[in-house]
Amino acid sequence: MRLSRYFLPVLKETPREAQIVSHRYMLQAGMIKQASAGIYSWLPLGFKVLRKIEEIVHQEQQRAGHIPMLMPTLQSADLWRESGRYDAYGPEMLRIRDRQDRDMLYGPTNEEMITDIFRSYVTSYKDLPLTLYHIQWKFRDEMRPRFGVMRGREFLMKDGYNFDLTKEDALHAYNRHLVSYLRTYERMGLQAIPMRADSGPIGGDDTHEFLVLAETGESEVFYDGEITDLKFGDRAIDFDDHAACAAVLEEFTSRYARTDETHDEALFNQIPEERRRTARGIEVGQIFYFGTKYSDAMGALVDDGKGGKVPVHMGSHGIGVSRLLGAIIEASHDDKGIIWPEGVTPFHCGIVNLKQGDAEADAACEAIYDSLTALGLEPLYDDRDERAGAKFGTMDMIGLPWRITVGPRGLKNGVVELTSRRTGESEELPPADAVARIAKIYQGIA
Ligand code: ATP
Ligand code: MG
Image 1 (cartoon, helix red, strand yellow):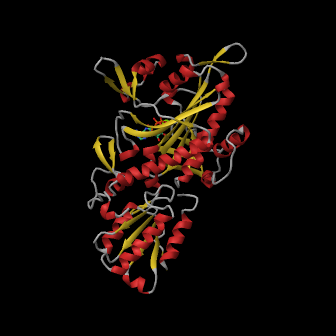
Image 2 (cartoon, protein in one colour):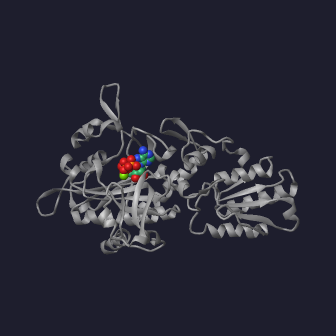
Image 3 (cartoon, protein in one colour):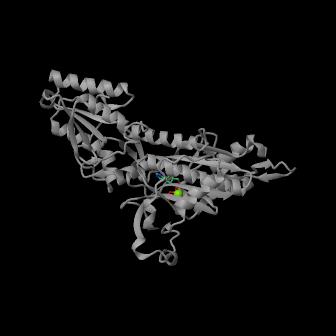
């Protein structure tokens, strides 16, 4: 993409309404525009990152054997009356009436709808196990929408639902989700710590929240400092292997890690003092096992192969896709702007032309642009007729992890400059070598 032809409305002044850095930078970098309280338009740069995050979520869900689909945002109130949640949900639910006077709602979550789909088609244990998921907009009329996309009213969520014959199988689905979430967040450059949580209005026994540590997080968290040394990394795992998934769950959840909702001071104090940590965290996902709560209420039964009919065991599993943009920026920025991890960056590399209009500099930039593009990478070429300082300022704000700077002086010696956004370190090298370096960095990522 050439910046002169892109739509990147970078703001010069600091937006006053933003209380936390991710919100401020998302506005300044021209990623989002507020439409009304807690509701945002996704401008091209923000939309690009949102899509990248979605793509990672899709890939990791499908790696775990979960099946993508799409349910609507608007739902009929009748399904929610069946489960009893239409009255229970309260003012966070946006209730709508259509022209036929039917009660509708903008879905805050989808347990009812997926259970209805399941009961309409599945009648036999032979069709289990089954896990369906979608990535869809949700609406919750939050009392205090704030912090930009972190606590919106309209927000994008991955929500998945498992259907299993037995509790044991459903707990395997739970473990499988925990494992797949670990890799999902790591690919976004995040460490998200699973913490024992409270099940709240969804109801159920087993639940973990995934929290990213950040000063601006809304939850107070307590954990054993050893936890931050754990890394899932690139391990191969067979998602059908119950014991293997259970072992990973054990590894990542056996040390103390809880939010203030479930915190137990006595248990916490059993950790050696030097390892006790108190911090703040951003909830980026949650997994639940809730058994037969919805299948009982809504009659989602299968024949069990022994002549009987039994309600299926279920769980639901959410990832805050749009909130993740804020969480990633909170975890990765400096005072000049965003620093995108390579896994989610909107463009792989910036190209800055120090002397637009200089025949040699222009040609060198074009050549680098073409080489990167031919390798399947997406560069952002700042080809505007602007001062170098302004070009660097834009690149730093929008946070591309790598920048190639091209100018007549370097070209005389046959070199360009390759700069890391994270460390600020620069290196001079021939253009072809800079391209090769970028290609190598993104091997296995882009
Ligand atoms: P919270 O406690 O932050 O209100 P929740 O526990 O009610 O969230 P879940 O039902 O677990 O939310 O939804 C799954 C994920 O969706 C959450 O982990 C979070 O990342 C994201 N999410 C929930 N509410 C919002 C919101 N208002 N804006 C953006 N993302 C949200
Ligand atoms: Mg939650």
